[in-house]
Length: 258
Image 1: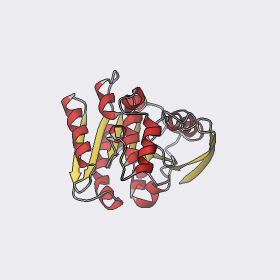
Image 2: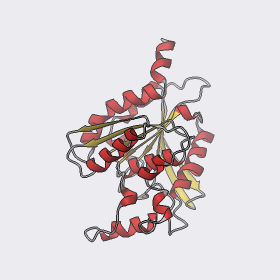
Image 3: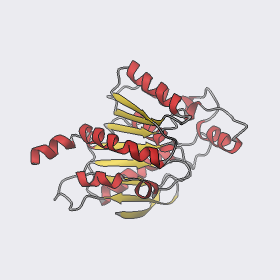
């Protein structure tokens, strides 16, 4: 495990990401990569500190956990310095590939997120389908771009408007997973979605899963008992791991080398 500090041109400040590598490294081969996005109020440490995700590295995967602060993983509609999508695509990914043996092949790259990171994983995968063959969201805040002003959460509501623009705007549409899947021109990534049955996010995730199915896009959805916390997400991790290894073709490769 290594924490890398580097300068982000998109954000014009120093940032950090955490990397987990398999031990030992497989010679000169490029490694398949899982890009792990954290949720709101969290940091790049949360995946490694709160879950058993390190198990994936034992299958020959590289794990990358970028710090994203309290961002929505998209470029802000109003703040030209808050270019969080550019930060991930133009800064983090190239920096990782310069420093580590990370594969740049689409079928060797997956993006996975928790909560707001799940929203980010969906938007990033749909806006850059040439980069990722697998996208997963656990308790994704998938309806984020649909949310309007809420008096019960004024600070969050102002943040949403600043990031996505006013309701009905073009910036809202281009950051809305429900609309992005309908206009996808390239092969879609495989979507693996989970949500706790006691979460307010269950209905938006069910609706997104139903829309994927209606459009004939490859996906699966799992709802299990539990709330919006690591207890529920850790119970979902084994299923995510199984699907991820299958779709990155690591199960077949491992069997072939056995």
